[in-house]
Amino acid sequence: MSSSERRHFCKSYFSFSLGTWVSFLISFIQAPVITRLINPEKFGKGSCFQILLDLLFTLCLFGTQNAFMRFYYSTDGRKSHELLWSAISLSLVLASIVSVFLLLLSKKINLFVTGKSEGNISTILIIGIFTYIFQNYNENILRFENKGKYYSFIQISKSFSSFVIIVILALLGIRSYQALIFGVIGSVCIGILVGIPFRFNYWTKPKIDSMLPINIMNYSSPLVVSSLAYQALVFTDRFMLRLFTDFEAVGLYSAG
Image (cartoon, rainbow, N blue to C red):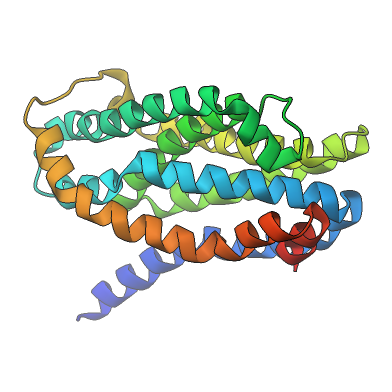
């Protein structure tokens, strides 16, 4: 590897990792502040919402982001937007199907997250799933095109906006799990608004290649099993705490 290649590699590595390090610093500052403003019981309810959101998002994504990466570099640049919409359309269809079940099971979803059967948690989950899908592809486009600075800027914007939204809501008197939920959803929406303009041409002309969805499904379907297994390992501890203890225990564990 020549010296110029090494410099290019180091510059690219730093530009992509910068967002992760700054986000980590923000999270390091955020944790004691948020746990001071919001009590463990409310924090536990917010954590239960995050468990469902991440699990359902992984299911709806169905590994299509890996197929998008697989076919991206072998696709003509002029047809990259077709690849994008062919991949994301599968996730959107699955998200629509999952949304129907969430609405049908809304009472049980509310009971799991808040301990009460009344509420609109299912609706917020649906909004979160769709925004997560668009943001995932939004970030992947920047990664594949080696736009490290833009990618890091989105990561920092998401972390900072989540922190600010939660603090503002808490100062306004909303010191509950709603503040955490709105912080999560709001930060993803800001990430979309910040990131899409950088590659607006991908999103302006929705077009689906008739053969690409089949190829994408064939490639991604085995990967969704491993993704769901990973999510199960990550969230089993908090899920079991929710079943056998109370929200305060879940909140203390999650904050720790």
